[in-house]
Amino acid sequence: MKTSVLMLGCLLATASLAQSTTTRREVWEWKDANGVTHFSDYPAPGARKIVLVGSTPTAVAPSPPAPSAARPTKAPAGTQYTNLQIWSPQQDAAFFGADAEIVVRIRSEPELGPGDRLLTYLDGKRLEENAYEHRLTGLPRGAHALTASIVNSKGVEVIRSTPVTFFIQQPSTIDNSRNQGPSLRPPQPKPTPKPTAPKG
View 1 (cartoon, rainbow, N blue to C red):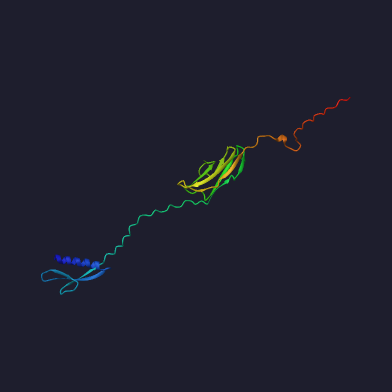
View 2: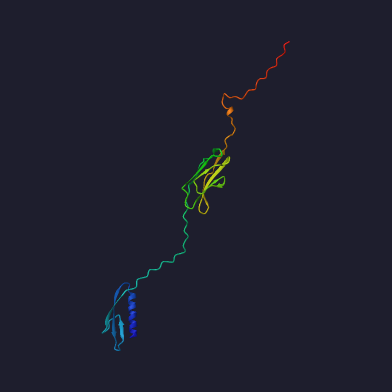
């Protein structure tokens, strides 16, 4: 009896695995003279037909291959500047007086990108950072140089302006108004009188 049940289980498993879709299969069952139950694919005298309905398990999709080591992606390129210019003051401009105000104006194309810094230098000394305009007063007499540059977040310079030189001149303090005008002439020396010969 145990053998017959085992055989039935094997037949059922085989039937379900052998078919690609849901199928019907006929199996015949009968008992012999000793009372032992038998199963067969073919009918036998006195056999009882059993209809087996089964299906093959759906195919399992292959798992995707393990991802390879992630490749480092390139960091997005920073802002690409096409121009950086000091447009005020102009090259070789002259200003008079210690109280003269010099307005420095800078422009970049495009405008300053995120993480970048605009650095402006007067005679090698840094002015206010990221400012497109500066107002300078109290500069000493002589020549002064302006430069500007843009550096990225890592401190690497990406563009530099053409330097601009300007001059501070002091007005003359000599008053020459007395010697100006066509009708004003310097004083002439008085003529020395000629000696006269004695009469005799």
